Length: 88
Image 1 (cartoon, rainbow, N blue to C red):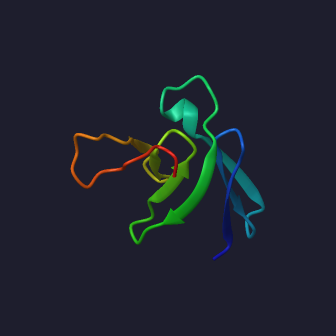
Image 2 (spheres, helix red, strand yellow):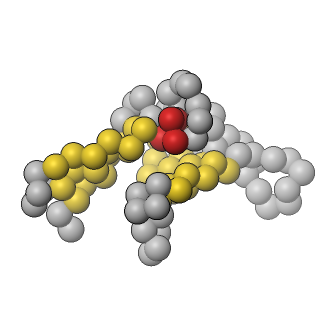
Image 3 (tube, helix red, strand yellow):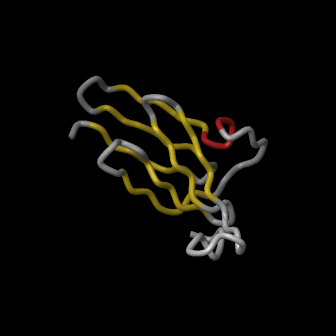
């Protein structure tokens, strides 16, 4: 594909379009209503176009660039089979 997705240390997801020579920055902390940076660690895109982003201390962030929908999944010991830690 002509698009490259990059995570930044400050918690942004950046889309580079090589064909259009454009760059779009998605401020994930702001989209989640947070006022601080989120240390992003890993990223994978599923078949529906959602990005699953592992964080250091904030669990998993699921982001859809088309709808700008952001969901945060955090560890909860009460949920059987759920995340055991927010360090992903």
